[in-house]
Length: 66
Image 1: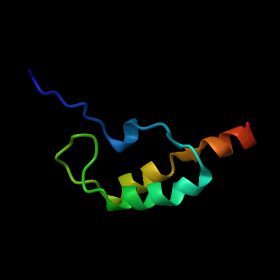
Image 2 (image 1 turned 120 degrees about the vertical axis):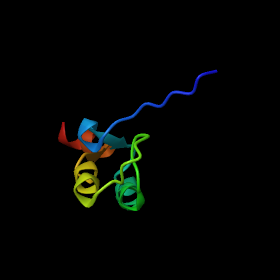
Image 3 (image 1 turned 90 degrees about the horizontal axis):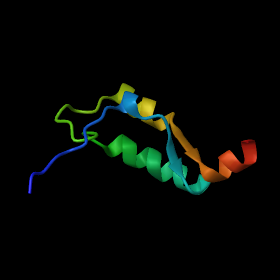
């Protein structure tokens, strides 16, 4: 079996959708603790972490706003 990785960068992410608004802080904390993203060997910098955090939205917020 050949092992393949799906590699991507922070700029490839459009949305990070969580179920409940209460999960957003946990996801932000998790993103800020990441060293690498998407199978890359390049360290994740603070700009990319901030970019990812800006993409977080909950299904609760979607249902309220739209």
